[in-house]
Image (cartoon, rainbow, N blue to C red):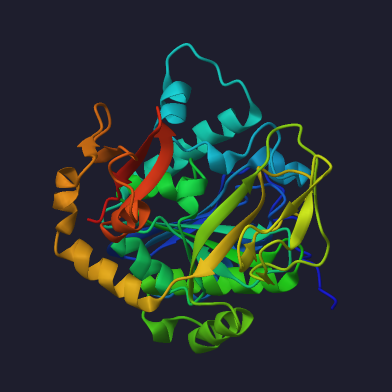
Length: 388
């Protein structure tokens, strides 16, 4: 199968953080599109440029403002995923506090990029007269259907569903410090849209479609003011054919700095794999699938902190039930569950004693709207997502 390559480099290679903005005369939401957070993913820059070109040419009456930003300027200029560290793994409270500490000069390229990008987004939040939306556009190193990653609050779930691609739940529990996770906790409505393979021209088309659908989902334009919106929805649905509508992460195969990993050739995102099936070589040793599942984000590039994930489908019933449970406020019972106590330092966070709470712990916490973090002193740690 041949793939046409993207051919829009000029819009990606720039020293300007702001790609552009377009606002109407009517106050409304602010939608910030983040592109090129990884420097080898320029398709998002091209997609945002297309949307802005159309808006400025046709001048529809937008409610609110659409803003597109470049993420990692240095990495984009070199067409590398990152220079010193992954910019989409740094958005933790601890990391941001360290960068803001007086007298501490940024130590890496990504530190400087994060300080500038965080300031740019924070300015948009500060001046936003209405609700704040953030859509982070990415591509993958393998052939892939489009999909959406979200911090699974109910408000994010509604926005993500409007993008018409399969939803991936639980990834934020494996990947601490993503930009969508951080700005969700700041009260934004956030999602990450993965368009397809890095150098595939269709990735730009799908990224553009996702941005238009995001504008519509934020109620910034009526459907009739968006070009070919029905065709855009159909295009995303067709590109995701055969992929379950919702999946959750089962496992992550992590890589450390200096590790040598080679993925076996031929895997596409969401391919079905069987338990024991060989997936790659990690420091010279075979790595096999731990369960019957689907391989997710197999690594076919030089830089990366994950070799692959394994995912499995989620029944729609559980999504419906979790919505009912969360809207009813059942999260208030968490502190009363056996073996559960509030975290001493972190609000809306709970510590679970695995010797007492043993059965379906993650499933119960997910149902109540919580996510899991790294364990502390042998105890499991969960925090409640912001739902408002």
